[in-house]
Each structure stands twice: as structure tokens, then as C-alpha cells.
Amino acid sequence: MKGEWIRIPKIDTTVIYVHGILSNGESCWLHQNGTYWPALLESEDNLADLGIYVFSYETGIFSGNYSLNDAVDAMKEYIINLDSVIESKKLVFVCHSMGGIVVRKFLVERSADLIKHQTEVGLFLVASPSLGSAYANLLAPLAKFFGNSQADTLRFQRNNIWLNGLDKEFLNLKDRGTIKISGKELIEDKFVSLPGLFRKQIVEPFSGAHYFGESFKVPYCDHFTIAKPSGKEAIQHRLLTIFLSDFVAPSNPVDAKISDTSKIKIQPQPTHKHLESFYVNNPVPHASKFYVERKVDRDLWSFIQKGSGIASIWGPRSVGKTSLLLKIKEQAEKSNIKVEFISTELLNSGNLDDLLMEICHWLSPDSINEGKSPRMLLRNIMKDYKQNLLLIFDEVDYLIGVSNGLFFQVIRSLLFDGSLNLNNSIFFLFSSFVAPRDYIQDRFVSPFNIGKAFYINNFNFDEFKRLLSNLNTPLTLEGLNLLWDYIGGQPFLTNQAGILLNNRVPLSNVIADIEREAFDFFYHAIHLLLKNDESLKLNLKNFLLGKSTNLLKLKELIDKGILIEENHITKFSCGFYEGIVRKTFAE
Image (cartoon, rainbow, N blue to C red; front, side):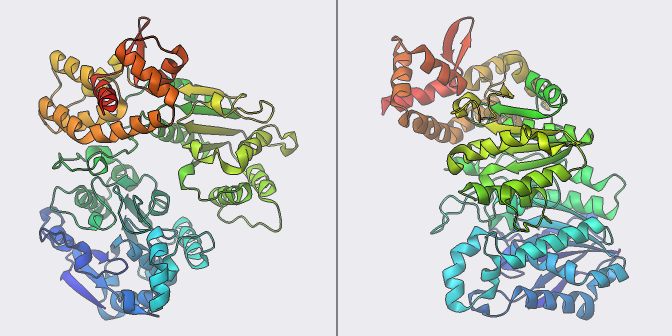
């Protein structure tokens, strides 16, 4: 346990590095090539006047009853009393994992000291959970055996009183404005393979992207490597330098500038065995040069502006549904519409009442049950909204199995509940992999037959061309046609090809990288689709062989983006997909 000055500040700003659980102030930030993040920051010439400080606290399997509260007390002693770090008027905390919880607790508990010193706070949260982590759940038996109170406090569960209370206290502190707090949140991309955590992110996006608007998923990084940039070109380090530059001299609005991650170019990386280490299935910011506005963008927004109701966006995976939702969210907020964006894959409830309570807490963290049923509580929360409300549920497929679809009956009942006498408009927006028509079991209780569905699939050639016309070095017409023949208008692949081409990777290398890195992922996705539907598999095989096929099954393959129909001719949407299908049937 110690505090160490890497560099004394020459101006009124100090950066404080705070590590996570089972780590320390050295190993947490140390890349295997020897790069040490605090030292890397020290080498930035344009930030040469910043102070740099590394705080370490006791954490480990054998830390026993040394709790998070004890770590906060230690931080107070070092930052306020021993090393006078608080004399800097601006403090930026770079927090990994549990370090972010320690710092948020410190800010809440020592707010009087910070107000007294007129301190401005920046939080650069690196895979830091707001509401706990599945990692702590994995450690729970070990923590119990060794009496480790830190891991016990970190457990992810809805009744984690300590963390839920801190979450509320910090949000209140931030919203009051007595201390100016700005921030940026980075979340991990890759899964960590550990017993009980196979293919699971240690800090889930909803827990690690909670406080400061647009978070950023760091490519190629898992929970541990995200805190260990390899050098100055590592994207997490570049984002930190942008954040610090804005924080030191905020000549432009801080939030607007630091949230624009589209200006950060993801450098071409060495190839990897697994797709998730190469491709990042992130939403594309609509302000990015790689976002292409489509007709569906305009049609959906026009429909929402008409008032209360429900709409669904549906289409294959990785075609831009979430990107479109985020654009709609920003448009709505600019129109004074209250927006709640709920990623349903992150809701943990398996029954209706628990699910509704989670949504109630999401909509109104201060809501109190007071013996009311979750359905009544949700109704009252919506009634109390003072402005128009847009509820966005991303990946609604995850809710289909909840109480046999009763959740959707609740949604419909809210839309038709005349007793609410609402002064505002309520609009529900769903995204789905499945066609909304397939959700309708009873047309008298389903909401999917009273709204409007918007289908989104691959880019057409004009949209494909428009995206790739924004490159640093535009493609020739021959190169454009070559790439179109190979990947067609598949948005995910088009976006990734654009990023590589924008970094001046030769077209032949781009195609080779996609073939090498993306093929296995899409192969397994299509293989799983066909495995679950033998009739679909048979018809695709017949189509490949030029035999007669079931037209309805071909329509389903068109919906999934595997086939397209042009001038009354059905064909593969691109050479990339055709190669995958041929391999599927060759094995």
C-alpha cells in the first residue's frame, strides 16, 4: 500500500492511476513488452506539465477483512494528507476494474474536501464495473474460504446493497453539480476463458458503461489486457491523451469532443486465431465517416415523430440495427424526448415480475415498491414522466422466453391503458433478429401487430459506394467492384474493410484478412443456422446444386442476408457467403 509520484505537476492537473482487485500499481499497467502506462503518459510531450501519481492499496486472495472501505480510507490519507495530491485543482483518475469503485466511493465520502479545494474531477474508467462483476461471482467460493471481503462486495447481483447504494450516491453527487465530474468509459472486447466464465466478459457492457454516455469498446482487449497498452498507438492510450487534453484546456465542450471516437483510427493489427480478437462488433457512431444513412433512418424517425405507438427494427446480425437505434436516440433527445435505451441481453431476470422490476429500476433508480406489483409500479413510473418518452429495447429476442411472452402483453396493455390519462406520448422501439410477425401468437394481446416493422439488411451498391468514397485514398472503380463481388453490401464486413483501407492497407491484403479472420466466424454462424433447421439446410443445398427449392425457404435465406433477389433472379449476396456455404456442404 503506497502512493508514488511518477512526476510532480507543473500545472494544476494530476493524473492518478488506481489498479483493480488482485493486482497492484505496477503489474496492472505493465504490458508484456515492458511498456508501463504511467511512464507512457510521462513520455507525451504535449502533456509534459501534468502530474502523474500511482496509488496502490492492499488487495489479494489473502487480504482478508481488508475491505473496499479500508482502501478508500488509505486513498484519503495518501491523496489528502500524506502526498498532498489534492492540491492539484484538477484530478483525473485512471481506474481499472475495482479501482473505479474505490475512487467513486472516495469521491462520495470525501466530497466536502473536494468542494473545499474546488476540485474538478475526471474519471477515465477502464473496464470498471458499476454494479458488480461476474468475475467476483467466480471468486466467491475462494473469497469465502479466505474471508476476502473485497471479492464478496463486488459480486454481481440485484440485491448487492453496498454497490447499489454507491451507484445511487455517486449519480446523485454527479447530478448535483457541486463537484464538476466528467468522464470516459472503456469496456473490454474479448472474452476471458476461465472456469465458469467461458466466453464471458468479466465486466459486462451495461456494468462498465453506465455513467458518461457513449462508451468505447477497446478492440482486441480482454479484461486484463485493456489496462496494458502496448505503446503510443494503442487506442486506449490515445483516447486517454485526448481526454486529458480536453480536460486541461476545455476550449470546446468536453463531452462532445471526447465522445467522438470516430476520429481515432484503429490501426491494422497482427492476425489472430479467433475472430473476436480481430473484429469489433461495435455500433458505428452516426457522425463517423463509416456510417451510411439509409432510407430506413428517415422512415423510422418520421414514424416516431407521429406520437405514441410501437415500432420494430429487424434483420440479420451485424447489419446496423444498434447503430440506427443510437442515432434515433440522439435525434429524440434533441427533440426533447426522454429516451431510455435498454439492452435486453443484459437483463438477467427469467420471470416477468423480476424483469419488470429491473426495468422499473432502470427507468427510475429512486423508485420504491411500497407493496405495489411490478406492473403497477411500471405504470406509475410512466405516468409520472413529464415529457414524451421513448423506450428502446435492443435485441428483444432475449425476452421472448420470459413468462411465455407475457412481457409483450404488458407492453400492449400500457399502450392501450386509457386510465393513465397521460400528458405525454409513450413510444416503444424494439430491435430483433427475428421478424416481428413470428412473435405473434395471439393478435389480441401481441403488440407486434399494431405497430410498424422496419426491415434492415445489407447495403445496396450506392450505399456501399458512398461509405467507401470517404476513405483517405478512394478505391478505383475496378477495386470497388472487386470488393463488392467479394463481400457484397454486408455492413459489418464493409465497415471493417473501410477501416483497413482507410489505414492504407492494400485491397488484396484487406480481402486476405477478411478471408483469414472472418471466415470461421461467419461459417459457424451459418452452420448453426442450418443445423437448427434441416429443411432450410436441404433447400440451400438444392439451391447450390441448381435444383428446385421451396420459395418460402429461399425468402428466409434472403431475410438472413445470405441470398439476394435482383431482377427476379435469386443469387448469393456475395462471394464471401457463397464460399462459406460451399465449405459447409463439402464437409
